[in-house]
Length: 310
Image 1 (cartoon, rainbow, N blue to C red):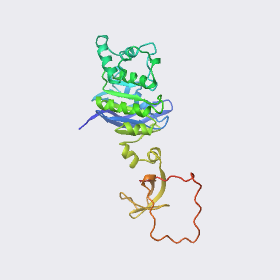
Image 2: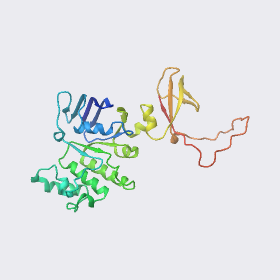
Image 3: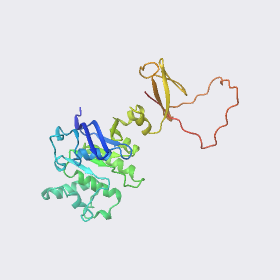
Image 4: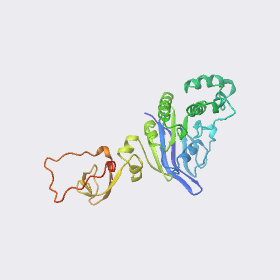
């Protein structure tokens, strides 16, 4: 069974008026975890803490069983065994592709390693080119190869697809996922794109204003959100107010069967997603003392979405 490989234990960091945490988070060996949230929620700060570019004010960070940051220990970024791909890729414009990839390597073994990585990322034959001669997708592959050059224990990706054209992103997502699975590389990546997070990640951590709202599989985040924010942030949802009555929840749309016991009279939210709504014709139409209201003009109807949130 996979063990925790990256651990944040009660971590808190203060940066001016912004505060991230305190929270705990663990990532298993070979796992791919996405950090998802709106702008300003602390996603990139979380990566910077793991990489060693920020110091926690409280708590500890552990990588492969070794404490790399707490109140008495500090391991420099270059000694943590972490590779990072920045949002803008941060390639050196005056260096060739091969020189960019070899930047952090010893000269003695750089040639063989660069050749190996170029083949790995599908850029064999690009060694002598410069960054300005590459497409966005090719630049991303060079940045990825450079981050993998030193065989890092952990790979960190900051918005890895944000600079790519929309029509190129699905292809690059698929290629990256296959590559990381092949390498069994423990990976944490930041994104604001839900589709991206759900397609790539084994688990997704949702942040809001520096707080960890929930970390779970994509399926569980969608079907069983832990908070109202997650319910509204993930996908599309309508939330109905309800009250517990016996084994049901009374709402404006009728009664919903409780999925777990709750005290009588408890106020709850019921999440409604469209794919969970079914319309059935009644055998006998109900009596209506007034004529039915006219249908809205075509295109003005609203989707309705269903799921319970206690």
